[in-house]
Image (cartoon, rainbow over all chains, first blue to last red):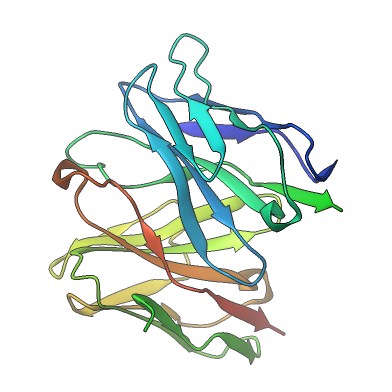
Length: 115
Length: 115
């Protein structure tokens, strides 16, 4: 079945460091791909998304490119801030008529940014 | 006011007790979902509903039941709670993906502890 695998955390970085969180997926067809972020004590919120191969999603300085050839959707940010400390989830949505809209999540990667 | 609300936010109960977690939304979405979050496992889908008359089991429905009382309300019940149901529970809502946004909106979560 469809699945998502993320790099394990926690990831600890200094402020202004470069961030990469790896995400790979297994799916049939052409899923949509997402990154959600969970700040401490809160629910998840959409960070960015991509719906077809070679699309780049971007938001708040974060970006990720849908790579069908490597089945990947790695999250990157050029310069992290303390306020980026959170748990990041990669997810996919299988796009078939009877499953469209469901999300399959990776296990989450905790990011801690130190001043 | 929050678009997706969950009650209670925290609950401690004993093994064997019946528990109901409630979710309400003001986004006007037809689709609603219940997930549980466990450390290192990400979010896993328990049940989902694509409209008031449509209820579907997710990945981990055993030990849970749901009720879709109205478009805006979707409740999750644990008929006889057990300790391994201790987790963080999230409700989410969405439009169908073909309506464009293909994004789920999450409530703040309910932290359930079963002793």
